[in-house]
Length: 166
Image 1 (cartoon, rainbow, N blue to C red):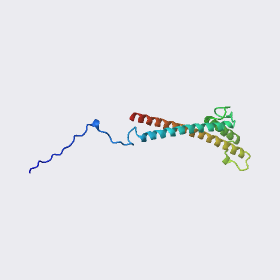
Image 2: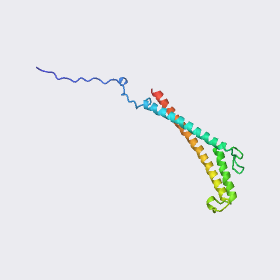
Image 3: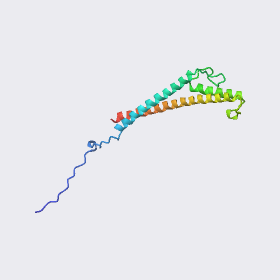
Image 4: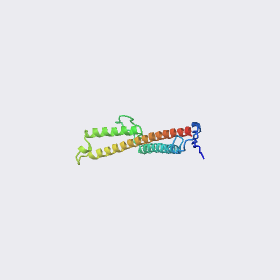
């Protein structure tokens, strides 16, 4: 019996348009992971913006509740109610100038323990430090809002990509 050699049969590959890419849930702009990251960015952005705005409001309210107005010796905002970082900074400069004038330029560290002006200088220095701390709080609040806006824009951008990719 003679046999004929078998010829292998091979199917032609499917055209590119008919091929389906393997499903990878972490790949592509329409993926669940991308949507999750976008949602997290939006949530964090909203929290940062609200936290920053709240910090600004609480700091401004705390300063305003003291009923202080910017002193006449301040370089700016004279007579304004003290409730913004600019007014707080101007008041610290007024305190510094007043202390310098009252002591002839001497600082707390330069004074003897029995110097009658030492308590006044200590109080002025503590007031300046407190006001400068409020200026820092306003800066942190502004930074939080800025970071939050950045997160919101990033989240919106990713959401836009997922909508296009879906």
